[in-house]
Amino acid sequence: MQKKFYQPEAETMPVNEIKKLQEFKLIRQVRYVYENVEYYRNLMDEKGVKPEDITCLQDISKLPFLSKNDLREAYPYGMLATDLNNCVRIHSTSGTTGKRVVAFYTQNDVDMWEECCARAIVAAGGDAGDVVQVAYGYGLFTGGAGLHGGSHKVGCLTLPMSSGNTNRQIQFMMDLNATFLCCTPSYAAYIGESLKEKGYKPEDNKLKAGIFGAEPWTEEMRKDIEKSLGIKAYDIYGLTESSGPGVAFECCEQNGMHINEDHFYAEIIDPDTGEVLPEGSKGELVFTSLDKEAFPLIRYRTRDITVLSREKCSCGRTFIRMHKPMGRSDDMMIIRGVNVFPSQIEAVLLNNGYAPNYQILVDRVNNTDTFEIRVEMLPEDFSDTPKVITKKEKKLQAAMKEMLGINPVIRLAAPKSIARSEGKAVRVIDNRKKMGINT
Image (tube, rainbow, N blue to C red; front, top):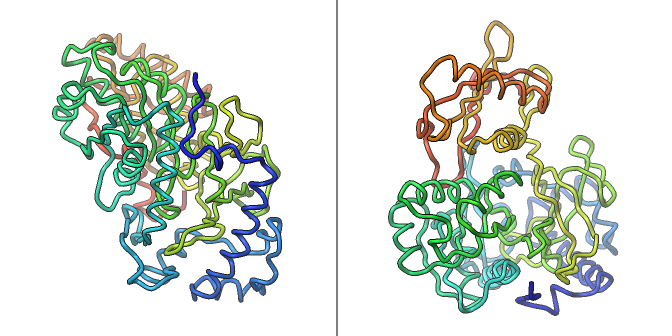
């Protein structure tokens, strides 16, 4: 594949130059935040560290972490580092697990974010001749706005579809010859499923690539989407807290996401102790925003579990790569003493010929955890014969036990019986949390 870059000088910068740039920006950013954000200044003072103590990249370990709880405590203006008159936009997290996190943006922040998304589109093979269908949600959610802006920066024809109304998505995709699809992976899978139901084959559309993120997805799900849509499926990573999608993105190698190191500094830490781990170690991802003006976060704990690698990439980019997150430390369920991630369950399903339409139900009855997985059967495999269904359930249960180490109850369900999501899929229903049980 021809090598493509949106900003080649930055994306192919020698590693020693990247580190020099990060060091300069880190020292500058720490002073800026200390002087302008009282909440973080208090955290630094409590830890006994001053801006002048930060003289090199390694000194970042002296600084305190930030968590989502800190951002909720500081809601709405406690982390704002500039005059509100300098801000041109806000975005927000969903707030499903507590008070919303509101992130502010100056125009420079928006421009930087959109350039990062433009890099992702070009890395996936996009150029000004492409038609980019953005089916992420718009509004307070960052997905739609980020890829929309990145598409404009590249010069693509942009279809601002937002999420939902799948019939209209398919109509515009087919009539306007969309070549890129940007949405959550679960919605991409649903669009592929809907196209098949309407009698379309993968070769009937003009799509060549998709950029999918905002929720965890497995390599098995990637293969399933690529097959159903006839495309190459690329991963993109970001958080509202750090700007949105585009913090990291996959290139043509589809082997880890390049972090935009000229704008973000990444660390891997032990999630229990906070100790910084060496490159190649699995741990929790921590980000520092090096250029953000309105909402600059230093050492923000993402809760995503991954690995960083500086191994040379054949695409020519020199930015460090992060592996696809293996799960979130706060998404991990402890069931009967065993650590279980939804991504493990999804991998088993896809490897055994099931679509990723499932729900995990966890409860506690008589002081014992119950663990059930509801899985849809494919239309071509559906049977209403109890003997056939029981046999399939036992086979899938054995595969789950081999992966997880514990036996879930498997309930095979009829096709289309589990509600579809046009945004982030709801996979886990853990009723123990309603009881106030620490999981």
